Image (cartoon, rainbow, N blue to C red; front, side, top):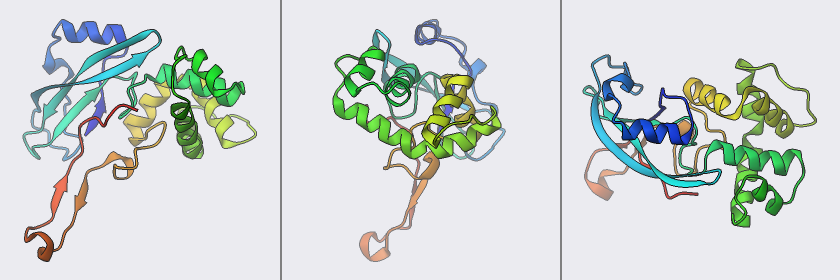
Length: 220
């Protein structure tokens, strides 16, 4: 399970916070988001993931906590990243704005996002995922900001994201609805929740197993 880290700030501020070894108890979730157990979660180490921001390509550590009740882990992602994508929201937002609002080519949009060597296919992938999500994002953001007048849902969603601020909107959508700005990857269950995989006794001879996906996929 992934939650957003309470710390708000830039990539560099987050890295410095982790390097200082901030008190883990300070950021530990008060209640398990999975089983809602009020017992104290315990530190469960870190995992590493890469982050690409404007003129910055680095590796960051993500804190993990273990619930004493359900024995599942909770990861605290920094607010500037999207789950299962290594590019920051700032980079993705700049690209989508340049491509879908300003009508620039994929190459020019990548340059506007300070990613001049970004593959053509990646830009197409972001655009398609956002277009599929636009109507849902527009509807969800009405809880944060007044709906914008626009010719279609894509333009409306982009206008509302610009007004609210991309990172602020992401925090609202993720914390309130567990929604992903570009939509959850196809290998995850809807809304990124744990999935129960059932198999027949004839196949495995064992009971159904519940699997909670908690690690990062290969960077996109």
